[in-house]
Image (cartoon, rainbow, N blue to C red):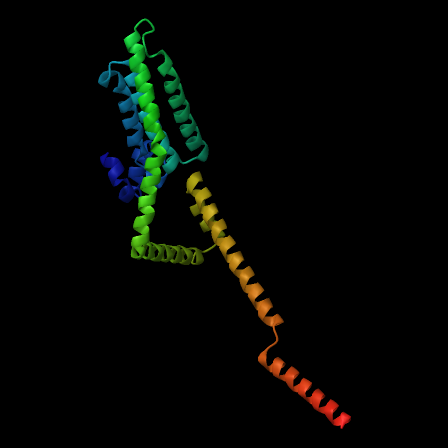
Length: 249
């Protein structure tokens, strides 16, 4: 834990990287502490047989632990490679499904009380999981309301993001050549490269959209007659009307 806590400021040291590479190299830099989560998951699963005596309770505990781990693994994507993240989440889902299916065999078929207890446990678990989406929606709604009443926080985050983007753009502009940028990109994990590519696509799409809108605005303005052209057309029409009136006289 001490190594993981000091890793961000010591990873530039060659000796530190060489010594603790096995602990840090498998995960993305911003989730370098995921090995603690892996250790905690293994420890929590091992405690199932110690903390509970009934099979149904043990399986329910395993389901909760695996579902929690799978949710955060899918949210954080800690592994450096996209395939590894997908495999980890799929395995968590498969283990949850297997543990849920084994609920059918957790009760003693000769004991009616055991079967009723297991049935009540399954019903309670189903009812609780039905309210999970409502709880998530409530939390997200509360977050949106808080953001609505605290616009200064969003403005500060946008300002910080703009400063960071400006700093990155300046660094990229000051790079010697494309090879140095390529070397920096090669050090990024696959997930981070995909995120960077998606962000670049968003920025390029926004730029193209703004350029397209600007071009349409310019074309629209150029197609409209200017004030001088309107005055010239009006004076020509007045001269023509005067000439026609003189001819009639």
